[in-house]
Image (cartoon, rainbow, N blue to C red; front, side):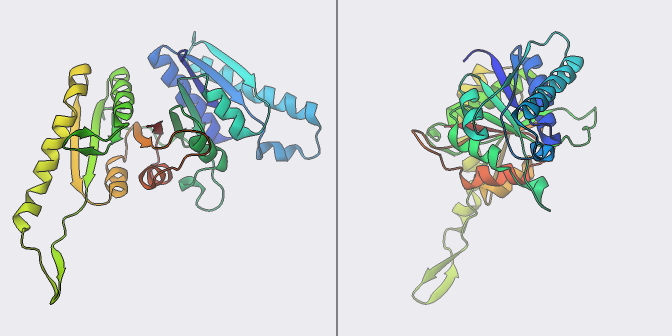
Length: 295
């Protein structure tokens, strides 16, 4: 990895939001910014029967405009541009391999497009081995007196974070450290069952006391699991958020207003990877930026 953050742009508002987010990230963390455009459906359709050269000029203009805008906001930021070839998903996936981080805009269609991912964003997430940040059209600015917060969702057991979660935690702690932000670590545990089935029908669970003690037990488990990362990042203020319920619901509720939400995505090897239910829910329902880290 070479200290580069790559942003995919296509002339749309979500892509502009992605370029702006990537520029702020690059400036904050001392990285280079690489703006790329891959041929795609969308605004290019408005060119109608325009030939390849007209489309190329349009794409170069989009790149130039994005570069000028981010340099106005971040003078001195190293910014490069590139017009990619090939279909968007493989082109952006290949570009991500040369970067520490890929940033793309969320561009769904239809009445629910504000809560849906576009096919390009989803396709890249399923194919790349690099962390990807998905952004949406910027919302109203947060109150200036509200501290920035990074939220990360993890799975943990008494033995520590689940396999691969160390990469998610490293990413989240590093982002919080660079931003001077509070890090909220979210862990959801299944709601206790208060009724059990017996030959005579449903009856109350006998070990209600154990169910009541579950939350502090999970809280202690999470605290112990985070000990190595607290030592590695002593300047990061950490809030532990442990709740019972569906992981997707607990995480999306806590992520409201966060500057960045970090989740994992399992799967290795060739071919497309599966995006888990929790990550999928966060991508569709959290209005801010979401970082998906392969584990």
